[in-house]
Image (cartoon, rainbow, N blue to C red; front, side):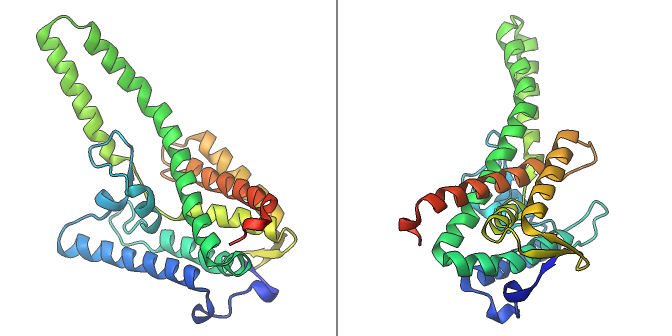
Length: 253
């Protein structure tokens, strides 16, 4: 998608400082992830991607670092640029207008907070997926009177918790959805061009995109590895922040 008039970026060099550095950091992390995988067999996603809080590899700092990580390889083991390209293209397109409207401090706060909101939304979904099985295991362990059975169940619980490491959230999509929501509220009638061909007002694009993400999240397609509820969380938190800041213009950064 693209947009016209004064909100079309004239070039990377003309991007405001926070937007420019967000793109640079993401590209650096993307390249570094590939280099370390290929040369040292180190997967940065294990360290910087966001794990569920019960997973052995979880660290609190991952709530921030996951926003700057992107998929580097597809299911076939081939290097893919799609994830980082579309996310950074969105930041490139919408970030300039929003940062120039709010200023760098508020814009950076917004970007990080919407990323946190996206993580929280996905955590809630993961909790409802994971907690029933853990509750069953805990109940079985508590009710077991046989020592060997209890030991077996405890090992099952340990293996299940260890397996939680495979659930990793990465990407700036939640923050990008927050930016899209903010753009739709700040410039609701600005014409955007989907695939550079189909014009639509920003407010309708936000509503439509949010509805699609909600539908895909509820559909829960087994082959879909996209964190749709994280996207919805970023969009929701972004809209809430814009509404709150509209009421408190005296503290505009």
